[in-house]
Amino acid sequence: MENGNYKVTGDHFGARVMYSCDDGYWMSGPKERACQGDGSWSERSPECRQKAMCGVPPQVPHARHNASEKVQEFDVDDVVQYTCFQGYDPHGYPGAKCLFFNGTTRWYGLDLKCIRKYKLTFT
Image (cartoon, rainbow, N blue to C red; front, side, top):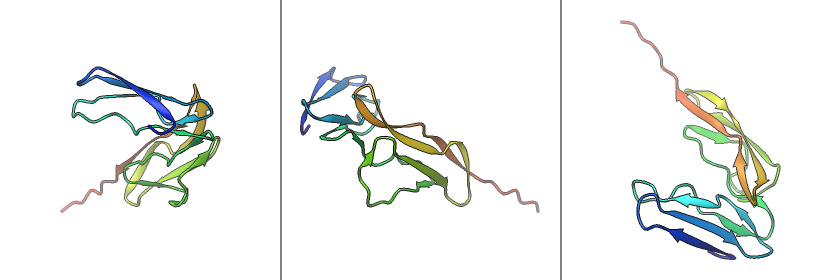
């Protein structure tokens, strides 16, 4: 991990990896991840940055956010709004905000699911 360190505890399902950044760097992403049942790690790997910023906003299936695809870093307090694709209904809160909390920057607040609309047809 560039500009930081990690420590792994365990060697199978349920194992954990804890991250830390070198002095003068801020963590963007989760401080801890867990090994899942399929052998992959939960969430995305964090990064250690010289400025407290969030990375790319999270993906929501069947939705897009209003930030430019060219932007890869977001300032603390930046907000993005999500819209479901045509044919899908939004359920939940459609916004995410970049916050610095507990020593790391992360996207918070997003609680959106886009549910496919069903059309009833009678014959």
